[in-house]
Length: 481
Image (cartoon, rainbow, N blue to C red; front, side, top):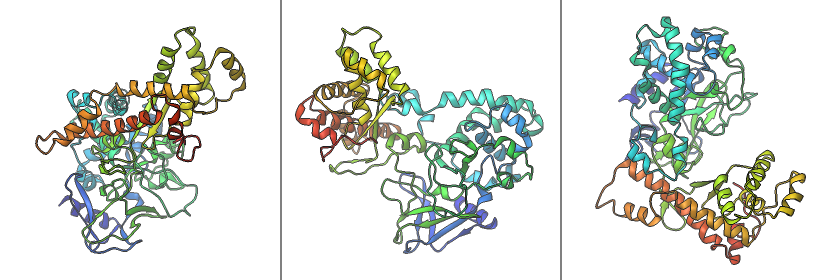
């Protein structure tokens, strides 16, 4: 099995793996996963991985071979294009690459929307997934950053154009591997911390694999690594790394029972609570909503909800500020044409958000309440507020409730189906199976619509009696997510 080869490879490079504690096997719906071979106690070390086996722009020799100046000249020190090219290059080296066994173990097919047909993508209309797939930006990076370097360095990439090792298709595959399996490896200022969490590379980071001397991890032995790795903040793409073995553990909301811990020379995967024989060993991805799970990993979570249904308790819905503005403008047609844009510009200058997030709590975000109050102010109120440089207080009243109800109705109209349509489709799946892509799309949009319906009920269509529902059970203002 490929997983056995990977374990052998890791142990041959000074890693450790407790073969009596866990094994990798196929799951029903999430590909391969880790399973306990015996009862395990909390704190049991499952495996360790030397830091030099992580694959990043720091550990691959390609950036140093290209040279720091050319690496920056082609913009490969920004975004993921540089790391994607490193994976492509290492794969092109075949068995000459230290990571050949690891790269051979990675998937080449994905269920993420990046690879969906236009018909399947249409089922995601209304969700924010469509705006975050990033396929156009990825292809722009490929043609404007990667291809020019490929053509200018035949000594590294060969004379053949197009080269099958560096095709756009391979670029998308490697990018999807990074999106679904990489870790954010933000540098720590010291090595005293021993606790670190797995976090997807586009999430806030806690774990560090970094070294005080980044070039010390570079296989070429060249100090040129410092030329392209000039920052240690969490946005630095050099902090993104592929972590063999650790990326094989699946995750599910509320199920995590293992965690990756940072140590000076190794990464250590250890149990965080007792695990019984035969149970799956789950890492944590930070419990993202289904929209992010689908976009990054190609699957969704369906666990029991408090209302008895199935879904993801971490689901959220994004409501854009321009939708709120359009709703307010429709209610105040007598205002001059520039009134809303002036207030919106002021709002943004004062640090207000342009997207508001709601969840299953049915609580109205404070900033959305504040924004609605700003838009609905009379001209004299606005004249007093503008010089203060202070956002309006998030006080819920009948006007706010009414506007919120209208906004939610308009937001619901973005979806191609109703909540009843989706529930009926999933309910009849046993008799009439549907495709995996369609099912995942329905689960994502159904979760979002349930949140919106909850907020609509809480607003009561502008009913005064619903204020308490929107501001939390204790009667205080709604919490900001």
